[in-house]
Image 1 (cartoon, rainbow, N blue to C red):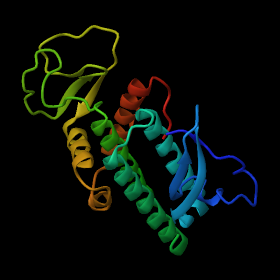
Image 2: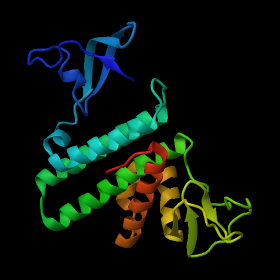
Image 3: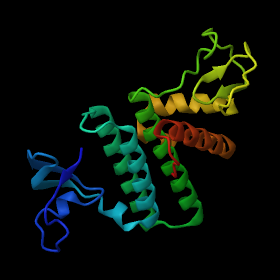
Length: 225
């Protein structure tokens, strides 16, 4: 939702702390003609460690910007709200761990977890907003797709089982079985479980590239994450 907080840029503004980025608050609104006006805010959680870490702050901002583009204005969705809370909580924990132990090996593991958490949140939102691709049936003949190692995925259409030689303008790409399995795991499981997920780097890179293409198709603009 879009609201206006009058005077919140002032250093002594009472509402400022409750309306900062990456702050969870209960806010009180007055109905106005165009944008509702914020009259009060009670801070519930600040995610202070996350705010001190530039890398996670940038990643979190990019992720929330994408989620915002996927959601219609002023439409409540409790599932996405809860998933967003869990995502920010996990980033905050990773930022705390990073302050305690900043060794290269530990940092690589933390970055791996944060990337999977980001992908988990994005794919959950894609699924809950109705943009999730069909992986089990062919986009052209609607027959169940036989299991194999590599599938042909046609962007904006879906999987082609081989029943047609697609020659349209839509992008075609090879999508491995492992990538689809990971996507289904990320959609159905709690974000915190990504810490237990072990995947190869090539699968992660394919997943990130595929996610980027799907998101850009949905929001119709370039996506960075």
